[in-house]
Structure formats: structure tokens, C-alpha cells
Amino acid sequence: MGVVNVSVKRSHVIGGETFAVVVETEHEGGVVARTAVHSQDFDRRIGGARTVMQGSESEVGHLSSAMTVKCAAAHLPADGEKSLVVMGGPLPDRATRIRLLAEHLGEVKQADAGVIFGPDMNNGEAVMDGLARTDGLLDHATGLSDAEGGISIDTHGFTAVGLDEGVAVVSDLTHVPLRTATIQGYGAVGAHMGRLLAERGIRVSALNFKGGTFIADGDEGLDQTFFFRTWQDGGDDALTALAGDLPNGVQFDADPNAILTVKADIFVPAARTEVFATADELPESTKENPDCRDIAVFLQDTGVRLIVEGANHPLSDDAVRYAETHGAIVLKDYIVNCGGLIGCYVEWAYRDELRASPEEVPAMRDKALRMVRQVVRHNIARMLKMDGSVLENAHAIAMENRERLLERRRESDLGDHAFAQACLEEHLTAETTA
Image (cartoon, rainbow, N blue to C red; front, side, top):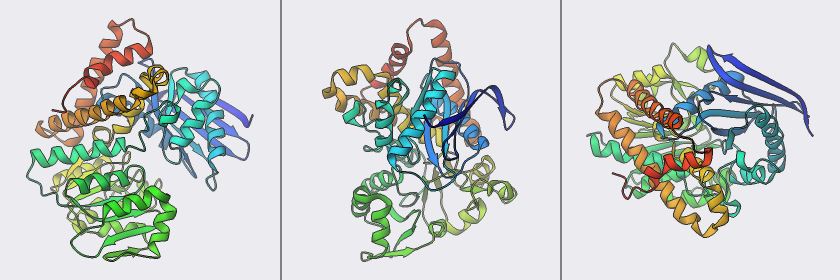
């Protein structure tokens, strides 16, 4: 076993907030993995597990507490948790990522038997499949492929479906012109979002990945059928190759941040945290993301009127407030990017049924996708009609949901999977997204 040290801290304070459990494991080769469990009010805790080159306790804490709010916004009876496997160097191959994550999860579940790890940065379906195949970890892993009894949330773009529904609601309920978009982070979320925006008739003016930015040379936008297939066939490697053999009507800038100056109506940050802050916050925000930019400069340069947070916490709270007071609508991450979380939770709740009857997977996936659209539409429609700021409205909706679910849990004697299914049924059996 590669774990050389384990630390379990209960009622541990991170950034002034108390977390129920924080587990840290040290592995051979200097790898450090951390899981922060925000609270333990429900039977289960759920959150993504990412493998990264660098990360801090404060980052995992912030992401963990945000997951509690996201679960509430998504009408899911679960607490939030988050995990980071910090390599301190180059990312390893898939087999090593699976092994490290399995070693860490084995220790975490000893400290909290209710944790469920889901996919996140550098840990997609294939990694989660390997984690689920590890003895004793199946009930603690979700986000699997169809072949492993999952519903393939990444393959079917669950998170992007929620983002797309958010755009639709804003289009329906406001007079904001939404004709063009830029996408930061053309990956499991951003690529599907580009495809869905194009189907909606919205032109993608620019998209980026870690190797640079593709910019449309003209008014037609980037061909999302072509770019999606390119990404689907080879990910970042295929996009890198494309940069050396550009199709007509496409420019390439080797600077990924070039996307932050391209004019558009919609901006979709789907890459990482701390993309924008206010000028006063930049000295602190750039410690987490050295490329963090001033929200005021961005809005002035691009004319963006709608920011759809595909990533977790891409805007600081003050940046959200600034955007809102300067004519832009911000759809907060936990309100709009909960599609992947909903898919993962549905998959986990119905795991036994799906594994027993694989032929039911497509129908369950369709129900889960319908739930994503229904939940996002309901929450955003409420948020836009309420008085007050985006931050206040979004948080109020989430906390109202959480209190209702906690009361339901207190009144129920069902086991964890059965209770999860009971809470989901009202959404999964809905016939429309209205």
C-alpha cells in the first residue's frame, strides 16, 4: 500500500469555517491527498475528486462547502465534500491516478462511511470505473460509464445541459440579446456547451483550452460540429494538432487568456476557479490563480451581458456583485452547473437497479437529464423574479431546499438509498420541464 501517513481532523477550521471531517493522506513519492467533509446532516456526502499538480487545504475547504450549497440547490438530500489529490509534479497515467484515489478513499471511508466520490478534473469516467472496481469502494464511487452500471454523465454532457437550460431561461425571461458566446475551457463541460449553444442558434465566437484560443474570423462563429468532433476524437492533443492546421475562417492565439478580450454576449467559464475578481481582490486571488483578471476590465473589453458559471467559483462574490451592478447577469455555479451532480446522485441512488437491469440505463439517463433541466429552470426562474441580488437570491433558494430536505429526513425511517430515491421520485417522474 502506498499510504505512508494518515491524518484525520474532526471539527477542523479552514478559513474561519468548521468542517466535520478533514482527511489527509501522504503517499509514496510525495503525493498528498485531502478530503474535506463539510457537514454530516444527511446520510451521505458527495463531491468530485480531482487530481491536480498543486492545491491547498483552503481550496479543498472552499470547494467542499460550496458542494453543500450545490446539493441543496439541486434538491439532493446530501452534504458536500471535495477531494484533491495533489501530485506536486506532472500528472501521472490513468492507472496511477486510480491507485492513488483508491488508496485515499479507502482511508476516507474509515473516517466517514457516507462519502461518495464523483468525477472531477483529470478523473473522468474511466478513472471512476477503476475506482468502483476496487474492492469495497463501489458504494463510494459514482459517475461511471454504462459498461460499469453508470449513466455516463460526461459522455452525455450532463453539466452542459444545465448550463444550456440556464441560457434558455434568461432568453425567455429577459430582454438581454444572446447571439454570441465565448467558452473558456473546451473540455467535458465546455465542448458539450458549445454543441448545445450552436443547436440553440447562438454563435461561438471563441473557445480556448490549455494550449491557446481559437477565434472566429468573421460573423459565422466557430463550427461547433467540427470542433466538438475534433475534441471528442482526441481531446487537447487533437486541438493542439488543429492549431497547426487551421480550417478557413479560424484564427489561433497561443495565449489561452486571449479569450478574455473577445467580444460576445455570453461568457462560459468552464475551466477553473478564481477567473475574475475585483481590482482590490486581485493580490489575494492571484495566489490561487495567477491568471485571475479584473472583472471590470473584462466586461469593458468584451461587452458580455451573461456569465454562465460552468466551473466552480470562477467569480469572487465581489466580482459577481460588480457584474450585476454593471448590467451583466451572473448565473451562479451551484444554481446552473449542478447537472453533473444530479446525474451522479441519481446513478448512485439507483445503482442496484441499474446493475441488475442494464437495459434500463437509457431510460434512467433520460429521466435524469429531464430532472437537470427541470431543476435548473425552476431555480433560475425563481431567482430572476425575486427582489435582491443574485447572490442573496441563489443562496436563499438553496437554503430553503435544504431545510425542506432536512425536515423530510428527520421524519423518515428509510435507509440511505431508499430515502434518496424517495426524494428524487418527484422530479424523475415529472412529465415536463415546466
